[in-house]
Image 1 (cartoon, rainbow, N blue to C red):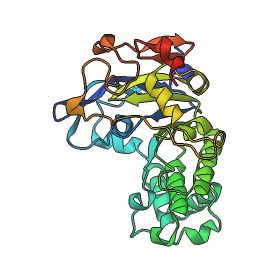
Image 2 (cartoon, one colour):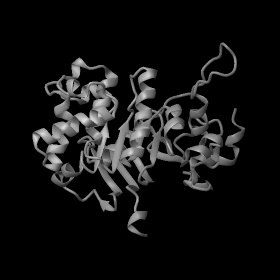
Image 3 (cartoon, rainbow, N blue to C red):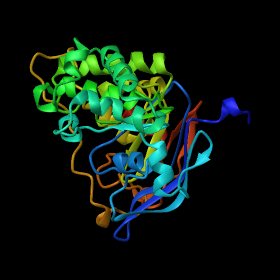
Image 4 (spheres, rainbow, N blue to C red):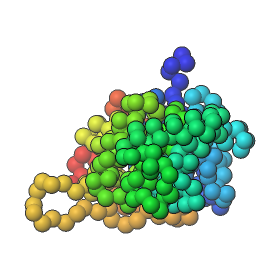
Length: 326
């Protein structure tokens, strides 16, 4: 493998435990430069823990008990806090889902954008301020020099999200993780943020991991998708074949919950019966079997994540029957 073939992010067989329960169970994924990978699933499926593990930001109760995480070929798990601090905000960074809560209310937003430049690049205050204002303008903040002097409470949620994106991209990281970046934003601002991420992916060349439960966002933005349930990846591959012909019942049902403008004027939105069980009560075998319309006695055994098409894999004993689901 040549240097150019090394993925920006490679997670191999990752296992995360909390209180003796396996929350993330042998997860593997890979992401190349300039690509957007969406990790989707309901709350409690392990999406955010998988993402937080990359930057060493897991909660204290969580422990990585197996696997590897590599950033541009470098194994991150053996690194100490000082080395990880050098990586955060520089080589890899994260946008959290609550921008107002993630920003320091006592600091002007411009100072928060320029902070990484001063920390990682050693720029003077004036040079860092100039680059911060330029990046703020680049992410669509009007009158950026004036906005840079404001505090988070003086800005809207959408504007704070743009500040978070500017701060995340200021050092032009190889990897950007966006954890539910459009949660709690109105649909107009959501569309603007998604368009912004698409443009900046092309301009900066960052690889992007998008954590979401919104399959509509995935269809609009991502190149590849990993569907997680019960701490495991149950389907993965390029967006097009997964949307056109999902091969896991969970993926099929997630796609069915997307509202459309076609059809009857009054119609009931589709839902997935039941809830994601807690880690203490995950069933043996396929963890989706207690909610799955195709489940039978075979599903008591754990299905492997097997190839079902070019670059497309699914973990289901009945993957050939998924298309027939209503």
